[in-house]
Length: 290
Image (cartoon, rainbow, N blue to C red):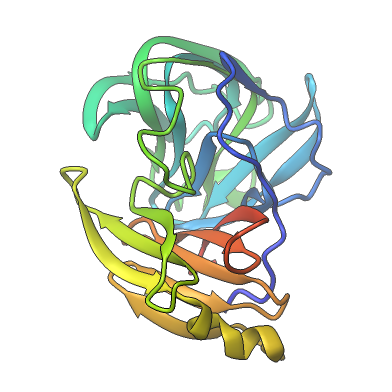
């Protein structure tokens, strides 16, 4: 159970570009605390360690390490993008690819450069022009993981990223409707402010299927939240209700959260709000298996 949800983000940016160099994050900050408007990071199954490191060629950078035969990092951009560039570092015994998607369809795939030896791990640069809304960086062993290198057994894979520059475009820069979570989690669930049966403010939550069609999941009303406003949970968060891939929690912080399960690999996007109507919201991405 997630005990606290702390990372805060604003609304998705309508600016022409996004630049992420990780300098605003202290070394040791995990991926779940990386908050960038309009950009969502989702680690795949098998990732054992994520965090910001210092001392790179241009300062801080993001690292992901896994202990599986293969793993991945998904980066979703909302609104979509028309170009991206980033610096990256990989490991000699793995193959690393980057695949671009638009509306769920593959538009391009590339194999990233691999260093020759472990003792020298340079940062390479990659750039791409073309419309996309999601990219997936996959990394997998292409040599047996039991191969001896430098007196130790190779047992991990990973990737490091820095200086991510994204040019927005290819999708509308404004929300298609009055959803509250535009740019955050809305690939899998959409949240609207509506009026409840008692005439008070309420939230209506709709799931999104593979064809981008919405279907009603649950509503959140004042009576649902009232017991936990008077007496916030102590010790652990409390599940209030769930439907489909969405769970409503009362948090020990006194806030509430709609946990949206993004895939079958344990990745969750938590949309946190302070009450009805919401006056303060933020988003946390985490993996329930880590």
